[in-house]
Image (cartoon, rainbow, N blue to C red; front, side, top):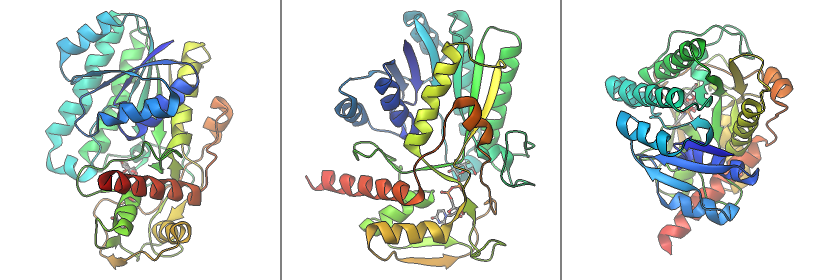
Length: 341
Ligand code: UFG
């Protein structure tokens, strides 16, 4: 059972490779290493005892993608993670995002069609819901106009997959992630932000370890319980496990529609200050932070209704906030030890 994992050396990709291998799947990774390290492949094999195959090329290259699929005509499915993901950068360089995130998907779908590869799991985002009208957010919630080119690439990608499915034998599962955080319990793989982190948890751990001076909390005047925005943080290993279930569902013809969409969240929302408190508790240290102005484009609050995923996939996020934050902290400390080795 061979699965292509695009972006398999990245944050969510690497954790998914581990879970796939744990369940006996053979994995081939395609990655251009634009936002990840080749060393992750060594660390994946340290965890699972199996070295995944890696091919380094850019999936926006149509010929290389076609050639890869020709050589790998025994693929049972594709999990497509490879994409740019920095919201702010996408506002500054929209075409970079549209080209990278959309052209790669088109190339993959085209090659799947030409080589009778029928199953694709797509890495989508709760960003498609924007500021939701009702909480928690179910899969039936309306798609809102995207706040950023990045968010728009997720919406358009779901549409591209939907249109392709209507006219081919391809089946798709779009997994809409809420806020993935944390790292593998081995601290051998985790998030490796390029430059200054945009996201809350890597910024917290980098501040605590001394790479950043101070965390800026973007606004405490939102209409929430403590004034800071609320998100549904989900452990990356819980998220990774859902991908294995999705692949299994496709291969074993358990899908109820040719395109299925699932929310991947815990169903619980935490504020920025609650995440900081959790960090201070598990790390037993105070975090240097200050409240500053709101960040443009942030939604006030969003958390998932995971009922449909829980029932249909037989999947449930298991790890709580403290465990998520602790694994992120252990990963940050492991990175520091490696630098000092
Ligand atoms: N935050 C801070 N300080 C920081 C970083 C973040 O206060 O230095 C706050 C944000 O204002 C927000 C919360 O922490 O309230 C979470 O912010 P993140 O950047 O970690 O996550 P977002 O919810 O903004 O974004 C995430 C993903 C995106 C995805 C989006 C969908 O990173 O890829 O969810 O809502 F599009």
